[in-house]
Image 1 (cartoon, rainbow, N blue to C red):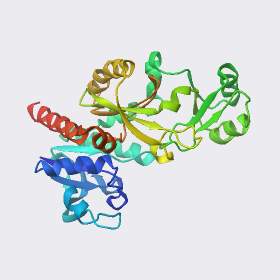
Image 2 (cartoon, one colour):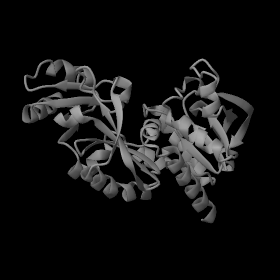
Image 3 (cartoon, rainbow, N blue to C red):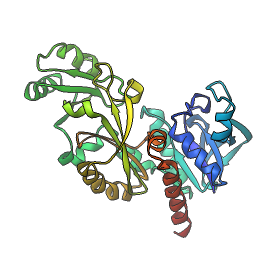
Length: 329
């Protein structure tokens, strides 16, 4: 198997917690060839298809790295070769670029869509990535979500707060908890928060009723290959924060799914898988759905370390299955 990971710069990987690295490591263990590129490495030249300047890499095994006193400054890979390769020549292409879903990301999905037409197997589906905004996708499944409003009209957002009293406001293109504000029943700074996030009514944002169960963790529930991973990572806010995101200082604790979490996940898994979403990260608070993450879901490493379940292996099994299905078709 030959895999291409479209990702952020390799030099920026924090391998002690990086899910893309965990996938690469598992692929290497299986004897597969691993290559990587960034968005800017992709070209689509009329008449010659979609290609990318790809680095074929070798990875230092975890055991050797640990014995060597691995640090962020220690190289964790070596480049075997670098060449321009047609995306269709890989068994699978994994889109692992982190948000934001900006114009460049959008253009990349169009290139990947063309690569699919040429025969490439891309996970997640480029069309599905465009169709499932990580904040907006949950609106289709409102029966599982907290009361939510997406708007840029400042009065509508004020009215939503007046109705629900304690509200979370967040940008539609953020990640890692960036730009999230809570405005309580007293309405303190409500106008300022709305003006700042909407750029005075020029940009749509999301408002959600505050869920007190955040104190028990904002849980990441993974769907891989249409199946529900049996453990979630509860990201628990620390030090008075309302955000549980690990990037915002939250503490990650792996837990077995509750009955409600499993119910929601098992309902969504086959639907999203049928749309070409092989890896999905559901965010849930107290069994309530708050986001559907499809661009670059994480938490593999934390769940694996705390439970012994090799999440990256589950993902590579799904990749192998997808590649086999593509050949068969």
